[in-house]
Amino acid sequence: MNNLQVLNNVSTIESREVAKMIGKRHSDLMRDVYKYESDISENANLRSQDFFIKANFRVEGNNKTYPCYLLTKKGCEFVANKMTGKKGNLFTASYITRFNQMEEQQVTTQFQIPQTYSDALRLAADQQDQLDKQKPIVEYTKKMLLNPGLETTTAIAKNYGMGAKKFNNLLHELGIQYRQGKTWFLYAKYQDKGYTHVEPFGYVDSDGMDQIRNTSKWTQKGQEFIYQKLKEVGISPTIEDNEEA
Image (cartoon, rainbow, N blue to C red):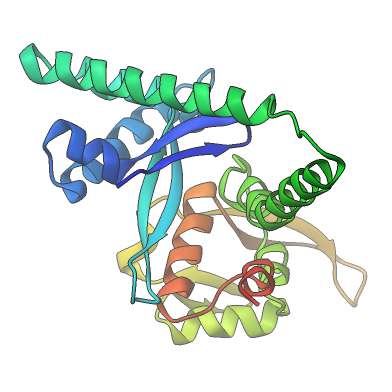
């Protein structure tokens, strides 16, 4: 397994690779990283994405996607600091070696000099092809999964090529939310997860009277939750569907 990746010019190691390096089950490492991520997010001066980046992987022969994390060098250092003794030392040596290998590969690729005109054309075409393939997914990730702010259902629905009404009904059919009056609320088992934030907004009704109504917006954590839930039933953002096509 070689799960070394570069995302937005940041070198990362996938959590499955890290789990093997430290001799821990991937599910256990995921649980630990989720806790680390949650703790880091409580400090407004820190960004958990500088350490741990949410991602997905596919198993060969299986169309389903499964959650994982991409660990930056800072993320690996964070994990290493939680370890002691020989295991901690071996992991530190291993991840430093991995990142050095990645940096050397990047330098080699960056300074690859074509020997002929046809080589130059081929190299340029290959590089552009890689950029074209990566751009949609990277842009979607930056927009939806790494956005620290709140997002309306309407905005999220557009990512799936739907209107807000159809999207809300879909979430209702999946047992995620229910409607009370004109406001959608999460079912009890999801209410305390930090997925949504209800806030009031003012408007003028048909009689010209000032009114106040509550509206729900999705947190970053909630947007990731929606993404994973819809993935489970085979629904992807339109930008990913276009990429796979």
